[in-house]
Image (cartoon, rainbow, N blue to C red; front, side):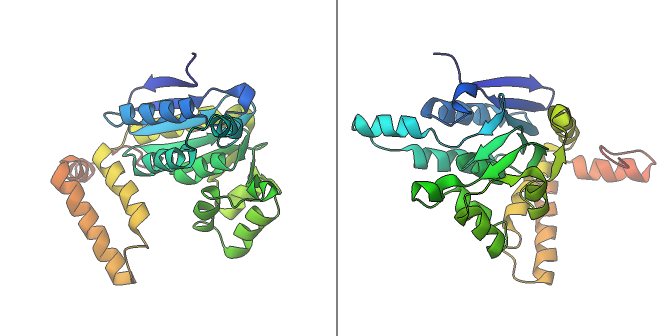
Length: 259
């Protein structure tokens, strides 16, 4: 059986491509497992990961045909649990995970975008939660989008079954940047290369902090005190911060400075 993802390794970053074009890159069991293995392998040295799809789709969500086949065969339905585990692995990964949304993203595909740290989209990409048309709630794309959107925008996404164009998704905050389709991967790769130049401990601790504020802080002062604990954690694990300050004081430049 051919692998359902392709993996390209670079210095300090990796590119993972879902490669099931005929199935609109839907996440079957094999693909979920392959993605999980690739993420695990990247923990050792990748500071950034670009996640994209093959062809005209980013990801059409879970493979519903496989789920029906499993149901008919009497096999337990573990797709939901496995999808949650995959998205948690993205969210908790020490590397910065960048979604390069090359086309349609439906349901579980939108969940992947929401789980990634950054998201770029081709100008012709579309996002949607079609689950209401199946008489179900979007059990992963729904709540993860609700955490990011105002109630009215979340309601539009979940109740209308209309697709959002990339410009609307950017305006709503689901996408960081919209680029011409021909420029999508080059832009994502440049961003990954930029991330690869930063200290891995600082990246990982900053990423963790993004998930903890405001949830674990109650006020302005507490938030700033929390920031001090994050920097203390970084300094306890790496000398890069001290070296960066010394370099700047001596007139040198640090990665990304002034660009």
